[in-house]
Image (tube, rainbow, N blue to C red):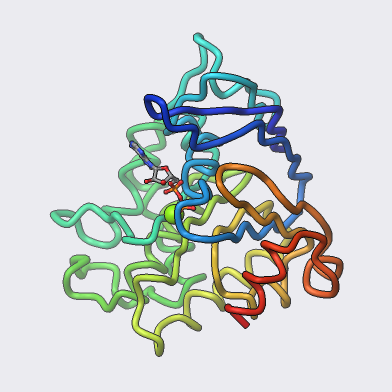
Amino acid sequence: MIDIQNISKWYGQFQVLADCTTQVAKGDVMVICGPSGSGKSTLIKTVNGLEPVQRGEIVVDGTAVHAPGTDLPRLRARIGMVFQNFELFPHLSVLQNLALGQVKVLKRARDEANERGLQYLDRVGLLEQQDKYPNQLSGGQQQRVAIARALAMDPVAMLFDEPTSALDPEMINEVLDVMVGLAQDGMTMMVVTHEMGFARRVANRVVFMDAGRIVEDCGKDAFFGAPRSDRAREFLARII
Ligand code: ADP
Ligand code: MG
């Protein structure tokens, strides 16, 4: 589903990604972890073309992300992305947030977009909040709306960048529960997170990054049982 081949990226002189290669198969749940500044956010932003790369290639469901002719808005619609800070449109109601991309990018009729929006709001347990504005919701609710909005676009995969790290502790589980449900339904997911409980529960793969490199890329049990690198061992010792 997602094929990342030898990508490297520089910001000026600074190399942020160094020869990263990994693949995500349909239905895989890949957790990406590693120290702050190791390139995790940059890596997943390259997958839906939010960041260009200087070397290498990424193919998502048959589409070469960084090829000149690629229709990036359409590609991004097919790869749901959920950020740390929700990024809902503040001037639109919850339901309008869910419908906008469906109408503008997928050219769905307004009625159909609203109907699907409601279906996904229900799925994240927020049907009754449909007419509220983002600032009237808690952080956990906003993040669930952001997930529902991405799902309403029928994505082939979902990317998450620290989706719970801006939340108060009591709201983390309501968001993780939605993500666990998605994983159990077979959604292909790349998830940057420090929530190792989530990783243990639903990940089948764990990637550990350090200084722009993929240092470990293995099954969950191998990662938690016996990480090969010292850096991953130190990281786990600090975080768990
Ligand atoms: P992580 O998500 O693992 O914390 P990031 O991918 O956000 O790491 O960043 C990796 C490194 O790249 C950091 O050192 C960061 O300061 C640097 N970086 C990120 N974005 C930019 C940018 N737009 N310009 C220059 N440096 C950047
Ligand atoms: Mg980051």
